Image (tube, rainbow, N blue to C red; front, side, top):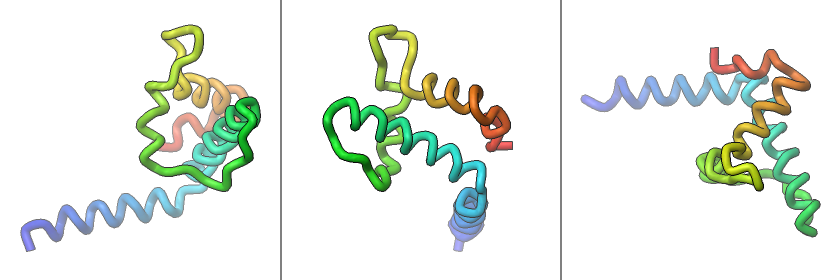
Length: 89
């Protein structure tokens, strides 16, 4: 019973994400980027990805060690749909 308020809060937050069209759009951008990278590596397109891979966005770097996949995701969103950059609000 002590944990019930915390559990209820987490369920509400998950429901907000589930119902957020903006969050889904951000994930679609991420999937498109992953498919682009897979295509250039000779792999097939993916239908989805593991949520655990989201933590790796800030770790994957290109030749510029200061630029990560997370930076690339934000840059693409800012270029094409800047309103998505504030989906967390």
